[in-house]
Length: 264
Image (tube, rainbow, N blue to C red; front, side, top):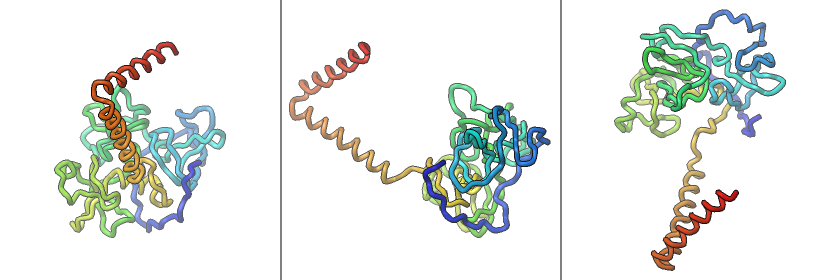
């Protein structure tokens, strides 16, 4: 269980933010229990807990509803556990069929064409072109209502983000990043990264949680300052004892490390 403390759930209103993926009848789903191919040793129970979890299917975070193994704690998002074998005429890629894959495949991980994040597990990919997306992204729609803004938002390509236009700064994370962007349909200038919108679909936002993927600026700054300080100290030592002697010592330290590794 996560060491993060769940906050009071936020009310989302009556408008659903995500759509249900089309699913074929699943003979392995009996009531609230599921026998899933990714965890054949135990049945998975459909439950809801206000805590952070890592989906063992797509390898992304979630909170709230899930399918969980009561024996070993194996978790799957609802949309990962019940994902269909293929998507036809999906609004994000209606040209071709999208096939469900359990692993990214290949030496290089592909990036989701919706949120811009790397795919590490379950995903939908086009066998005709290179388009691919996470199951969570596939559960989103072109036009959506989010609890962070009063107007409907429309998904738009990420080209505007690449241009460096200041209007594309996300109103939630206050940063620029790759991936597509939701923009206000009323043209009031509000923008929301698709990657940030996912937290309102996977259950994190409603339970007051934050994805551990979000960088901690204070820690990042401290690490950068520590590194710079160490480089400065080493540089000062080398300058103090003479450049030639310093290089000789550093070279011998490196060779000694290599020899100790070989002996071990």
